[in-house]
Image 1 (cartoon, rainbow, N blue to C red):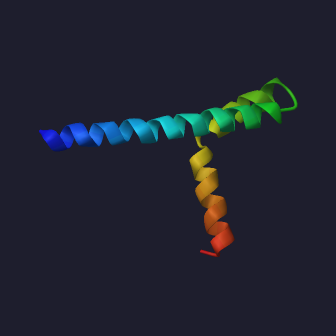
Image 2 (cartoon, rainbow, N blue to C red):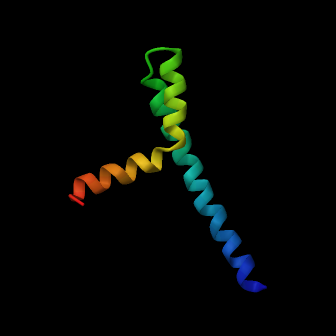
Length: 63
């Protein structure tokens, strides 16, 4: 029972960090949008920003 409480508190911290990253990605992509549809695309990109991050990291490492 005690282990379940401990794991839930760790999930809150990682969720908060992910949320801040999502807000940052949203601001970045929308601020670089040229028009309405660019803003829509920016919103969609902000939802999957970790995938872009991992892809660029693996490309940089040569994997």
